[in-house]
Length: 132
Image (cartoon, rainbow, N blue to C red):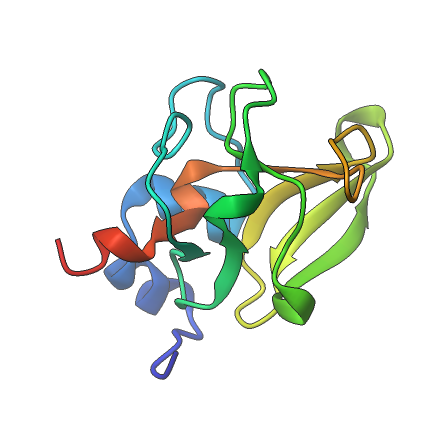
């Protein structure tokens, strides 16, 4: 997690264009198009920007929303903030380490938390893919 970029230029050099738009500009990838939507491998999902561990595969579930969904995050590694864009009130989720936009969390998920972290695949890297 060292060498976390601090400027847009550094982020642009580190990230793919869609990763940059999602993580640094708050964009949302089109539903049913992102990596990891249908991913079944076990592992840890990390921030594509800084490598912070965010979600475990055991908490991933099929929500039908078009984005990878998780019912729990890894402790304090995911931060939340109120989002009033698009004329509605939502809870945005961010990487607590680098501030990258991950997606949103909704109170309509499965037990045991009742939460649905609806996350952009472009914001994630599965640990299995880091050395691929």
